[in-house]
Length: 161
Image (tube, rainbow, N blue to C red; front, side, top):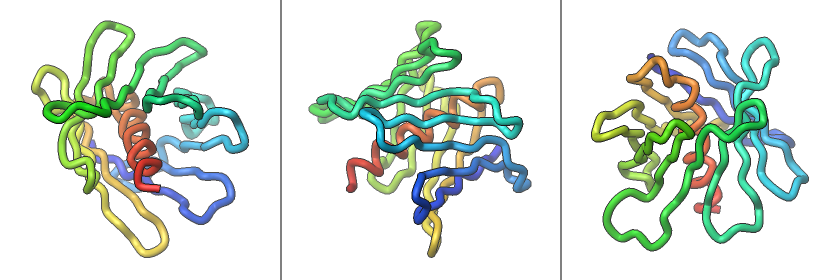
């Protein structure tokens, strides 16, 4: 299934809509400003929080926690001094480790588990909004893969700024 993440670049508060390839809105990502840490709420169309993305502002490493109902379900870590290999590693609560590989500078990357691609993320630029597609190849993990795509995009966006 293909999803499209649309950012509102000029809004006072950052928000993004995630739509299916048929333009049906599935999730809304709200960034909460004026806090000591960056927090994103992943909200479904009924208004229920599906996941919370939390990054502490004053840390040396880009480590993001993904929570559901207050419990951590995944940790996204960025490797700084790794010359060869993966730059992002995702540790899931069930013990699985996902890798995020690809051309991160151009924001074309894959989320993989044991060499199998679970999702492919591709960035496209528009005049007023920027958006990217997430091709989910593992439907049972679709929500988690969308959350991970938003996490990595946020880290890369901060890095460029």
